[in-house]
Image (cartoon, rainbow, N blue to C red; front, side, top):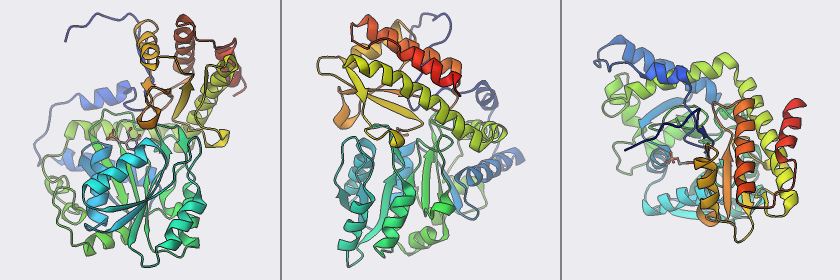
Length: 395
Ligand code: PLP
């Protein structure tokens, strides 16, 4: 790969992977250790304790995998559902649909609630789907907390209430891949049975470690599940030996990075991290509010309260080439953005404001996006960046 040096920094505003703090890079930059070295076990124990604390669960097992988010999705499917079992996947957009297709690809049946474009999951639809399932074929509800493609956050507490109101025994599995360490989440209080995350978003690490918290009810369901499985198996991985925990060699350097990242989150304070994400998201939303006056771009999320604190999805009018916009933002103004996914491909771009982010980089990203829009002649009105400044100045 030939590279030309870029003066200054290119800002990374995809909602994953996200920028990696120097402290995490330094923590990873050590020689591997032999598996009997006490530091290996200490690092794994620190990651497990930190993740339990971050998920806000007292007793759940933590399982970590050398895998990305799709890997931990697969682990949930393989452990909780036997072939032929059903799962309810409330539609949230690209990521719920991908998880649903993965379950179908593995021979499980999927019940979907209808996708409400621009809106969060309707808890009433979840309740209705579960009421219809009189024989309790549905073993779990897979709920994506915030769909990173749509930039919409779903109300997990309302989904929990819907399951309870239907009197259904399905387990609640939450994908907090894009919300962990970015938006309020408390697994035990929400009575979530399994929560899944990955290293490359709010946890500010490179991709490569997927993890989950599994409560006693979910672990018991996995023990009862006769489906053959090996690499993903929770029962096999609940073990003292690090080699057995990882079903092979642990990804040591990534785990050292994860421990360092958890340390950064706890030293800032989990609530403070959530508040910082909310503050920066408000600044991005203020800018989009200014830009949309030009009539060419708009929020995908219709309901302001449901707009994600991790990523903002911005739709564009027909004729605007999203890939060209991303190219100009990246090559001329040094801001890396994400495109639209699934049904939003070509119709939207996304600004990530997740992980190791602060006021300065957010203002840089917003101004860079505005510059790219203006350079391409997209009518954005005046004052998007100014609104972001005012939003941050107001706190
Ligand atoms: N779930 C959500 C909410 C995501 O945003 C993503 C990726 O962006 C995934 C799952 C899949 O994760 P990965 O790309 O690491 O496989």
